Image (cartoon, rainbow, N blue to C red; front, side, top):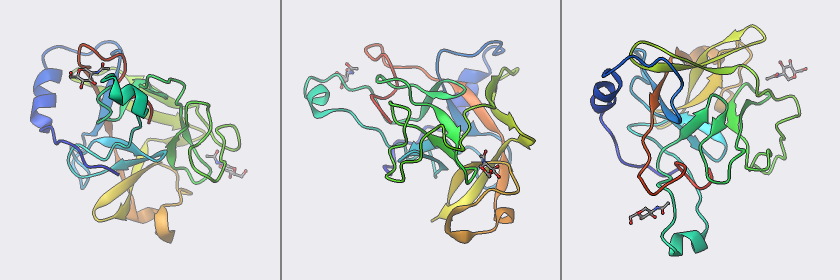
Length: 204
Ligand SMILES: *[C@@H]1O[C@H](CO)[C@@H](O)[C@H](O)[C@H]1NC(C)=O
Ligand SMILES: CC(=O)N[C@H]1CO[C@H](CO)[C@@H](O)[C@@H]1O
């Protein structure tokens, strides 16, 4: 996990409240918007899992050395989605899914997890149920599937929370009980890329 720059939430709000958001932006990032322990934290991907770290986040991304040498790496500092179930990366095809512990995960570009457990997106995992819902000031990233509605932030360590879907059967890290988790609302905010970039990261 790499901490990166903190962007004050107020600046996101100012940008977002300029006009009603009626349709899904080309790309967006996610911030917990409800009151509670994770308020204003960015949803950040690291090693296929999603976290609510402190400040702007812990996004873990990769850019090949060759591309870096040529000065063509995208920023790679923020976790950005190009639709409700796909990360915004140059390599593409990194889908967001729910694993058998009800943790929110992202696959590698070939549709497989980068983890050594070989968990593939197809085995008892679901990519259905994620959606972007427009709102008057910002959109919302939602999950609804199989009676499960919404997201949970479960304590991970050092004040960091891990993202799960809101199931009573979610298995938070280190054997913690699901009632140590809090539900949260994921606000979706349009994300602007630098002019010379085509995606927010090469690969997550
Ligand atoms: C865009 O320009 C910046 C500054 O020159 C550079 O660091 C970055 O790698 C460039 N990104 C791309 C995708 O070319
Ligand atoms: C996320 C998910 O769909 N988990 C399911 C995995 O399989 C077990 C056993 O069939 C189900 O109980 C889970 O709901």
